[in-house]
Image 1: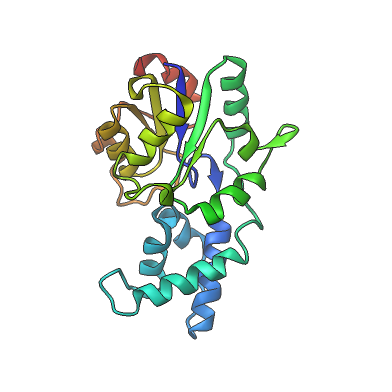
Image 2: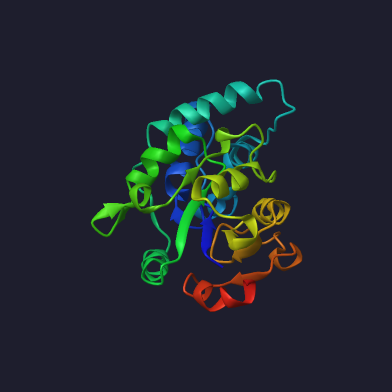
Length: 223
């Protein structure tokens, strides 16, 4: 196995504080009470749709959803680089992959308008996450984001590798679905944004890890 691809939010980087800050700013704008961090954390990986459902109990079928979505994204744009940080153990994992000569990249559903500057804001050694990753493929780079396999296949093309050479690591069921559809091995990051109602052991991944360093131990099982 020569390539490891990672989801971004809740797998590599903790972005829940800034996602939650934007949601609470929006709630305040609409006269609603703010939500505590422990309520926001489990849904942070579900993006704007999950956060709007949590804060306002609305979804794409609601007539005012698109306006609320646009408002949320504008608020997030004002705060999204305030507190992003590697999840515990991730920086050491990436250093270990580099030391072993294992290429790694990022495939996220986050729009490119946020992903580039966010990854530039996370320091990694004497550079940053954006500069060190071999690729950054975002949700709006393809017609269909995850759970479709399109962005994962785009990453393979960019990194000049075959899907069967790749492991995709993520913290959501759609990551497993997308990885399997692309023909990759999949690993669930149990340290990510998982809710009590999630059943990651039922998602059909090839492995699951409780800590980032456990990925190194699982590389052989995914060959």
